[in-house]
Image 1 (cartoon, rainbow, N blue to C red):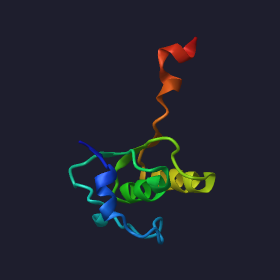
Image 2: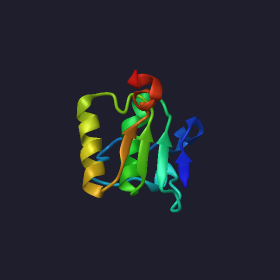
Image 3: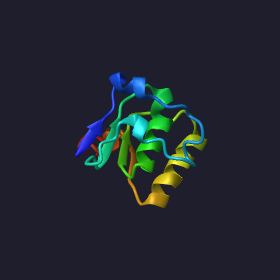
Length: 101
């Protein structure tokens, strides 16, 4: 099951404090049956919502840009790898047949 967070979920936004050291998932409303999360939120929210989903053991697809800076992207990548999860940026054109020409 795929769960998508959108602007109406912003009312559940937690503080950004210590996201990579303590999961704050219940505030994000992740359903237990969800296997993957799609994050199309505002760019500045990608990091904290992706981290929360990874802490909830969910695979994550994030719209471009994946985070606001390289350090945040590295932290998310390390968190996903340490938990054996997929973290991907929605950058599909590279895999489109027209891009191989």
